[in-house]
Length: 165
Image 1 (cartoon, rainbow, N blue to C red):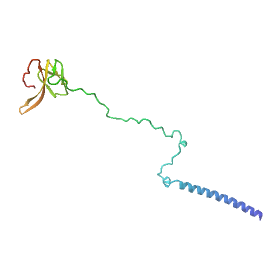
Image 2: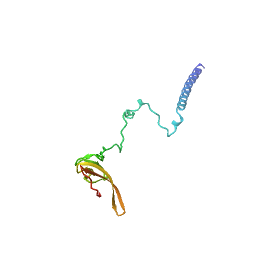
Image 3: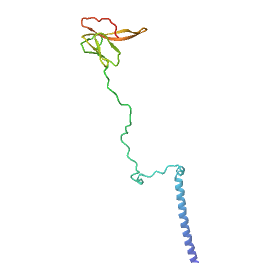
Image 4: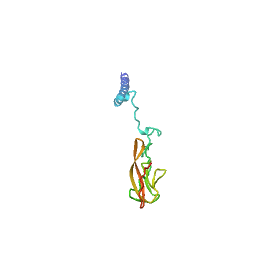
């Protein structure tokens, strides 16, 4: 009976070991299932994050740029001012060739002793004093236009009053 009893003890001991290892594996599985949230078990959940040391060098994240990339802009251009406007004011003395007004278009019209350049610059033709005046000019039978006219009064002379076209 001792033999039979010893064999029984060995069998029981072996069975106990198997039960313990099975229980351990079941408990480990239950613990790991409890540790993972339910959302990770769903099919649309993102893959688990791997530590950096386990990713190959080609998959490692790159270093961020220290300067922001410059985008494309349609603005950013400007031209310098053209310095337009009145250069010699009413009552000032001018000599032939002095620029009186630089303008775009005919805002002011040339009068007596004043020439006009191809860029509508008004300049003096004689030496004298600058004079500004507003003149009404009949455009046609029923309409007249007010124009600003620039003239140069020669030294010791008077302007002749005539219509400017």
